[in-house]
Amino acid sequence: MPIYLRHEQSFDMYSIHGRMHICRNLIFSETMLRYYLSETHQTPNPDEVRYAVAFHDAGRQGNGRDLWEADSAKLCEEYLMKMGWTQADSNRASSHITKSEERWTLEKRIVHDADILDIMRPICGHGGRAGFRERILNFLGPKDAPGVRNELVRSQLIEEAWRFIQITENLKGKLSDCTDFMQAMLQKLVDHKMQLPFMAYAFGN
Image (cartoon, rainbow, N blue to C red):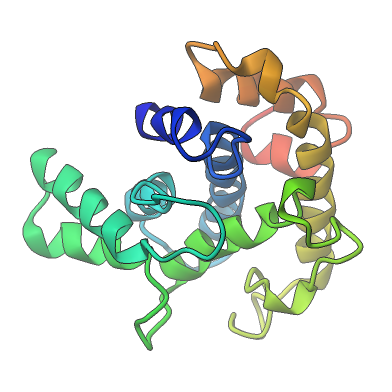
C-alpha cells in the first residue's frame, strides 16, 4: 500500500492506479484463484499470483499505457528475494506481471484477468460494463480445458466485479486517510455479500 499511496501523492491524484485499484485486483484475483483451487484439478501457485498482482503497477511513473511493466516486475523480484525466495522462484513470480512471454501460465492469466476486470471502472473511460469486451477475459474461457470452462460462473464474476466497482469507486475520498485500506475494501465485500455472492463465498462469507 505505501507504494500506491506514493503514486496517489505524485502522478496519480485521481487514484486511477492507486490503492483501490490494487485492492480490487487482489480481491478479483483471489476469487479466481480460490475457484480454480477448489472447483477444478488445477493448482495455480497462490503466492506467485498474490505477489504479482500486488506489484503489477508498482513501477508506474504515470497513468495511461503501462510503459513500466518491466520495472514493476523488477520491484517484485527484488522484494521476494529480500523475503528469502530463491532467484528462480522470484523471477518466475515476477514474470507473471509482464505480457511479453509467449507461454501464459494459469498464474499469469489470473494476474492479468484481475486487471482486465477492473478496466470497467468509469475513470478509465472504456464504457463501464456496457463497454467491457468479455472475450479478452481468460477466466473459465477457451484457454482453460473444456471440462473447466464455465460460462455461467465466468459471467457471474464479470457482473459481480462491475457491482463491486460501483460500490467502491465513490469511496476514494472517504478512504483516503484509511490506515488499513485492504481491510476496508474487504469489509465492503462483507457488507454487500447479498449482491456479491460468488465473491463473498470465495472469501468464506
